[in-house]
Length: 289
Ligand SMILES: NC(=O)c1ccc[n+]([C@@H]2O[C@H](COP(=O)([O-])OP(=O)(O)OC[C@H]3O[C@@H](n4cnc5c(N)ncnc54)[C@H](OP(=O)(O)O)[C@@H]3O)[C@@H](O)[C@H]2O)c1
View 1 (cartoon, protein in one colour):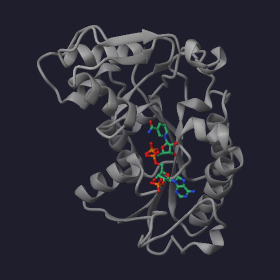
View 2 (tube, rainbow, N blue to C red; view 1 turned 120 degrees about the horizontal axis):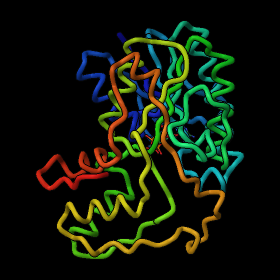
View 3 (cartoon, rainbow, N blue to C red; view 1 turned 60 degrees about the horizontal axis):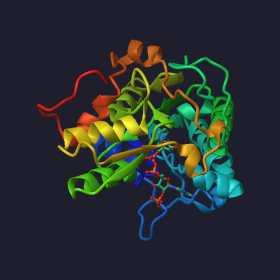
View 4 (cartoon, protein in one colour; view 1 turned 45 degrees about the vertical axis):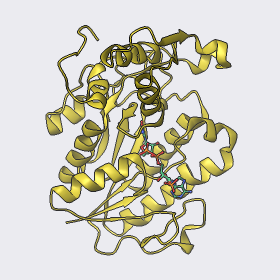
């Protein structure tokens, strides 16, 4: 079976490639970097890119302008990449008989309620969420037999903020984290398991993967500091003091996982599991998160 990963250099795409190869898949991946075997820049007209569907059974669309700040600063570029060309590519792949999986986000919701069911109306509050919500709508129209996987915050060894926190804490330096910005984090391993389950079963519809509840970035940093033996090095502040607007600080990001659980048996872990995975499982796990 051949798997096409669109955006092979992404955190999720590269981890998926490794996981799929480990399970015997033939994996091909696009990249916009120099010398790529399968070059693709989604800011450019698709006609200029390679034919991607030949011999491919399943495609996972990982490439995106994934930084919320960049989506707000460069909305035209972000819409072209995240919506217009992503949907156009999904249309081409689906028309060629490829099963397509689109990666999306909990930020298609406004975050006013926890554990959002997959069939809730979309109500994004920022440009990134709006582009992803529009991509989902377009995707469902052009690839109705495909699937959408919404993920909450994914934490892996290279995830910038968390890797930076750990380096700083281990060096005995303080870190600052927000008390009023929340996440329902999952480990990169769980994200890969969710993607692999959908790649293998090829279902249609919307699936979600999430921790069972939210915690604040301040709580996460404090937990990591405690596990590193650096308790007391975390300064917890309000994001409002750093220029964030209240409407951009919703209390919840968690998603209900019912459809994915029914398909795969995967269930929502405690939020600290993603932090434990970052450190490697050890004896110092702090209870209650
Ligand atoms: N990570 C999370 O916590 C999370 C949570 C929910 C949803 N998601 C979604 O999951 C997907 C993968 O996320 P990620 O965190 O793995 O992403 P990432 O590490 O930020 O990587 C984004 C990828 O998109 C590529 N890209 C950006 N602009 C492009 C363009 N114009 N043409 C082609 N490729 C382009 C980048 O290429 P370069 O490597 O060349 O820059 C990069 O490989 C995204 O759709 C994201 O929105 C992620």
